[in-house]
Length: 512
Ligand code: BG6
Image 1 (tube, rainbow, N blue to C red):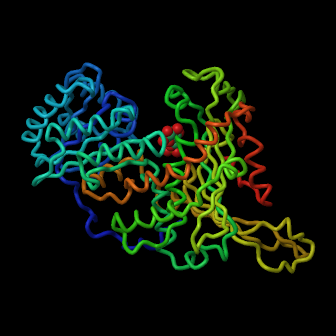
Image 2 (cartoon, rainbow, N blue to C red):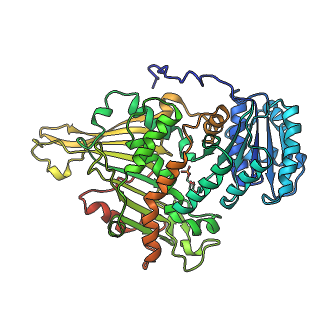
Image 3 (spheres, helix red, strand yellow):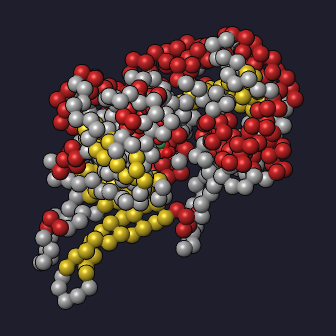
C-alpha cells in the first residue's frame, strides 16, 4: 500500500531540530535499562543526527569500573541490544563520550567526584553546562539523589538548563508519591522534573491523539451517545522473570495501572487540548484522571478482580506457578492480574464503562483498546438474531500489532439477507515501514529540547494513585483466598469474564 500524503502537521519548534548540547548523567548506569534501552536509543538518535555533536554521557553506579571498562562493557552490550547492526564510525564517535564515576548513591563523595568530572567533560565536549540526570536506580534513591545533586549546585540553572528524568515506580501509593513530589519540589522546580512513563514513548500511544484530533470523522461520535463501552487490555505472556523481588512488593495493580493504563485511559478519553503545548495536553489528561469516579469499598468488591497465575503453558512452554518463581515467597498473596470497571464523571462519558485488565503469563502478548459502539437502533434483517449481530468496534492495536481496525457488519453473499462481521484494517508497517526503535528515543530527545508533553506532572501522578488507592486499601484488608486462580497461558481468572458478562458484554481477545 502507498502512503497517500504525509500531512505537514509538524510542530515548528521541533521540526528537524538538533537537540541542545548537553551531558547526560545516568544513575544506575551498570543496570539493565542502560544497556538494553538508553544506550541503544541514544545511539539511534546519533545515527539520525538529532543528537548534538556536543554531547557526553557519565555513568554513575556501584560497580567498580574505569572509563575504559565502561566503554568496553557498552561496546559489547550495544552489539546485543542495538535495534540494527552498529555502524562503527558512529559508535567510535559515541564511545569517546562515555565516562564513569563509581560509588554508592548515598555517599556524598560521589557527588563531589561527579561535579569534578562534569566540569572537565563540559569543557571537553562543550556541553554549555546543560545537564540531565536519568535516575535508573531503585526507587528509594530518587529523592536522595536529587537532594544531593541540588546540595552540590548541580541542579542550578543559569545560562544553562538542568533537568532530571525520574523512572517509575513514582511512589508506592498516594502518600509516598506525594511525599516524593514534595521532597523533589523542595530542591528543584516542577519544570525541571521529567517523570517518565515509557508507554508515552510508543508511537501507537502517541497516535491516539493524532487519530482522534487530526481526523474530522471520529470526534463527533466519540462520546456517550454513540459509544457503548471501552475496553483496555494489556496482556503479557511473560511471567515475572528475574524481577520477583520488586514485583512481589508491587503487584500488577501498582506496576501497571496508575501509570501505563492511566495514560491509555486519559489519551482515549480526554477533551481536545487547546494546543499541543505540554501544559495544554497535560491539563486535559489531568482533568480525565480527576473525573474518574472514586471507588467505594463496595465498588472494589464488585468492580475489581485480582488474580495470580498458577502453573500452565504459555506459547507451548510449561511455566511454573507465580509462587514458584525466583524471589517470590511460596505463599505470596501478590496479584499478577487485575481487571477493573471504571466510570468517568463528565458530560462526554457519563454511564460509559471503561473496563481494563492487565496480567502476566497470559494467553497472548497484546495491548489494545476496543471502542465498542452502540447497536444500530433497529435490526431489520431476518435470519440474523439481534444478539448475534456484532456491534461496531474500533480497535487501536498498540503492540505487538500496530494499527487500527474497524469492525462492521456486511451482507453475506447469497439469496438470503444474512449478516457477517468484517474488519477494515490499517497496519503501520504497510504505510510507514517499520523504524527500528527502543521506544526511548523520543522521550530522551524531548527532554533534551525541553518538551515535557510526554512526561507526567506531579498532579497527574497523584491523580493516578488516587484512582487505585481504595483498591489497595480493600485488598490489603481482605487478602485473597483463592490464589492461584488462573492458569498461566489463559486469559485470566473467570471472575474477570464475569465482570463484563454481568453487564451483557465480553472481552475481545486477540490470540496474537
Ligand atoms: C513495566 C512494568 O513498567 O512495563 C513491567 O514494570 C511490564 O512489569 C512492562 O512488563 C510492560 O512494558 P511493555 O513496553 O513491554 O508493554
